[in-house]
Amino acid sequence: MARGSVVVRLSKGAVPWRSVVYLLGGGILGAGILVLGLVLTTVGVLLSLVLIGIPLLGALAFAGVPVAALERRRVLLLDPDPAPTPHRTPTTPGIPAWFRLRLKEQATWRELAYTVLFALVLWPLDLLVLACTTAFPGLLLAAPAHLALTGGPGQGGVRPAKLWLVESYPAAWGTALLGLVLLIALAYPLGAYATARAAFTRLLLAPREAEAADALAEVTRSRARLVDAFEAERRRIERDLHDGAQQRLVALTMTLGLARLDAPPGSPLAEQLATAHDEAGRVLTELRELIRGIHPQVLADYGLAAAIEDAADRSAVPVETVTKTDDGTPLPRLPEAVESAAYFAVREALTNIGKHSGATRARITATHTGGVHGVLRIDVRDDGRGGVDPARGTGLTGLADRLAVLDGTLTVVGPPGGPTILSVEIPCQAAERPAAEA
Image 1 (tube, rainbow, N blue to C red):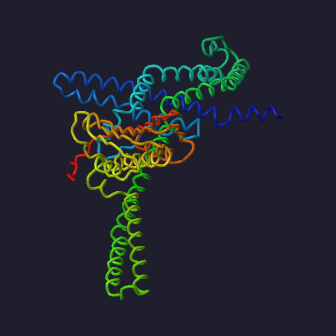
Image 2 (cartoon, rainbow, N blue to C red):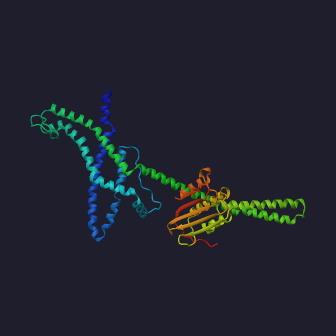
Image 3 (cartoon, one colour):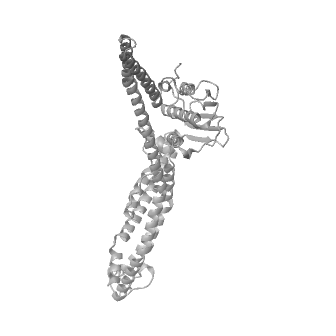
């Protein structure tokens, strides 16, 4: 009973019949692609003599894109797991952007290679395997019908599959039974080949590394969006504090100053107003420092070079600054995210020098190389005791994560005894906006 149920499952199950449909469809599709490809190539070569066929031949380079999309759908016949496309979505709309992106992707050329392989090798192999596993048993199964069509016994008999002579219906039905057994037995290798064929298609047209690359790219883009949103929020907070709380504190300080002038000298009221006036002044100073730390106005107005100079002036350790390009010209304006990340890296380095290094002087060198397409490099060097360990705090780790979003790197060299050198490299191009003159 158990053996009979297995036979029924194999003969009526979905996998053998799906395998037949998959391979037969591959044969029909491959033959059509071969004929169409030969026709278009011939027409393109002939018309290229008058330059009309050159665009057609160029368009054939993208022939693998629709073929691969159809093949990924056909894989679903045997594998329910969707085969995702390895192509990225263009960031800008329009056909030119689509073509430019596809030209740069390795998946486009991999799909073209698969299309050529499919048109020349795979579909004949599919039909050959299908013929060996179904056509031969099918001819044996058709022996009784073949014998009846020739007039029945006594008419010379038939030779199913050109193998042996069958002259009677018992022999014909025995041949048909043999064909049925062969058909069931060959369902295993047929399904194995079809499964391997689908796996080969998935490997070339929807590789797992492409899914991982897409996921990684999306994570990188999401991190960049988060950094942009974070920077926008910092600017909003800085603007609100500058235009709101700071202005109110200035007004309060002025009001307290006027009140001190009206109070009788030496009275308790005058002393209380003086105390409140001084306290309001300290709060205003701290608020200005806070605003400068959130998003310094000098960075937004005058660029990275002026912001580095400002940070050096307020450092607890004397700092020498050099800001220039590789040809000696002033440092250009850079993208806002790059300037902000570089500035806060310098701020963190100067803070660490003032608190932990014991240094007596420091030097900041900021250079931009390569013109429009180049790299910003910042080196902060001090003569302190060294022995920097990034694992002791989260400041350097946070800076490294922030720079990684911009494809930048953070390197710290600080052997015991010094010197300590913090290096930042960010690939970026100069912004079109000129640097403002202080």
